[in-house]
Length: 339
Image 1 (cartoon, rainbow, N blue to C red):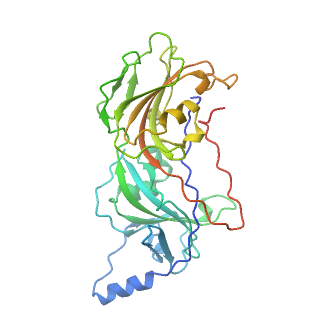
Image 2: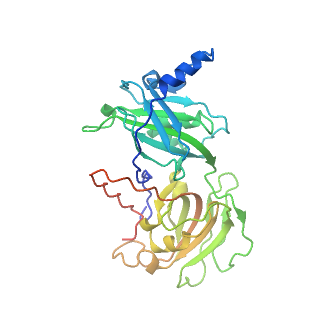
Image 3: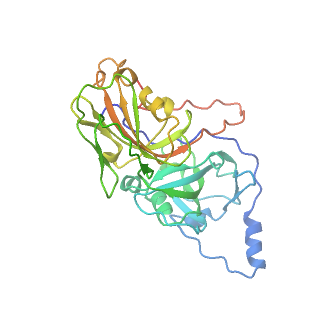
């Protein structure tokens, strides 16, 4: 479908980490002194190859990783470093994950979002089919769990290098807006009904002349943080044309959340979503000049678009990396951007 086809959420801009102290030997020694047998680790693939990896979090919230030996796995592998004691994550929910990208040879953290918030990972069949190891490591653990995840270079294509990530499951949230229903809704706008089980919206065919200006109508009022102009937001949405009420795009239909920054979407979205609270559901009526009016030949160039958007998560922009002598590769533009 045209216009708002989502892309795979990109990792936040990296932050350079300081050198890290080895922790593996100290942990093993502490277990022996305490007279405790080390429990068998859970994981997938060659989990024993990840035994050298350990994680701790500094006082400022930043991750510190030790790789006390060489990782020799030849398959995609994961190892639970710490069992979680929080709630279980159910299929269909959104796990909030803090991730550190690690140099597997040295343990240096080259990028992370521990101090910026968390990343939303939707537990769907598409994720399970695309990366069953990652899916299972989230689905089979509880909030608070810490996991090492390794991908050998031979699984990533020619010219790739081994990839190591360490992540912590920080929380969970439903894949739908959970705010309180708003009673004072403009009756001139199309009616919206929600599927009781999934929360997917249905939008009635609009009637009358389309508004000439952007309309921002909250349908559910969340109590989470406000969306900032530079935040990375995770959303569910459905869009229909004002002219005939036909759906032209929907994250619900793909069973895949949409992640983006507000500078990568049409102006009607960036103006309408900034300042809204996480947990809210918002109707946006976007006139052509704030949509695809300047995109010659676009199917929606002359259309007023009606969206119902669930705001599930917002992550502030990550800190910029310290100078390292090499420029960061530019972010791939989202197909959602105004053309």
